[in-house]
Amino acid sequence: MAGSLRAVARVLIAVGAVTPAAALGGGIERAPSPVVAWVRATEWHTPSHAIPAIALETVPADVPALAALLADGTDPQQSNAAAALAYGAGGDDALAALRASGHQSATYLLPLALGGRGSMADRAELVGLLEQERDGAHTAALTLGALRAREAEPALERAAGTPYATGSAAREALRWMRQGAWNVEALPSGSDEDRIIAAAFRNGIRNTDRDSVFNDEERGGVWIRAGDAWRFRAGGRVADGPRLRFAVVFNAARTRAMLAVDVLVPNYCAFGDEYLLTREGDGWTIRGVALWWIS
Image (cartoon, rainbow, N blue to C red; front, side, top):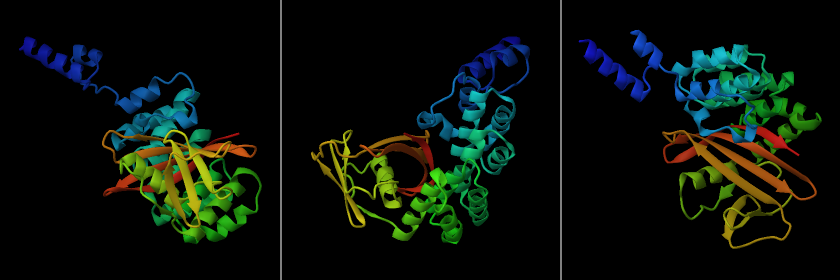
């Protein structure tokens, strides 16, 4: 019998279901999920535009451990715990943990998590965050724009008159809402990555209203905006023209994704946004948008 128990323990350890200490001690203590293990192992701040795909894997069972790390972990652990709670599918308890935290990352990412659920109550809370002008107010503005939350227009109009990031984000959100959806010519491959990039163009990409042609060096061509339509032309290039860069990561099931969009305009600005998306049938829906870097 003892030999059989030892054999079972070896199997459980091998598949990561329990820790070696728990197995040898005779108790059953589940090993941390990959998401929790990633946050616990954090020693340095992860650049905001380099959050890995593991942050998309959060499920409700991970939330208690992530909430504890958000409350009592090191500062880098708190930042990554907030990312995992906001980007994953942690449900109501993940939102509660973000609301309860005073950490800057949690305040910044709460609007993204609210957009991820997107109920009318969540949209009303986003309007409240925008009006309170908290750290995540610009994320709230962009997310309301992505959700096409018409009831938020008065609050966005008021915020649009303010300076700095929040005012800029509110003006952009209003531009997206008033435009509706841009038309996008399909990219040739029809891959999930292409569908996600097309979803960003349909939604709106910040500061792409100043120019009509953008280099995409990774794809070897240019994006051309003509009125309310975008199309990609392979082989084109504008010398010293503005650039767009895209990077997509998925969860393992390919039901959630993050899209990083960098916009680089010579002699004007450079910045990067993160889009949170969920799969809807064969397509992808944007749930929220956050400013990640600017220079």
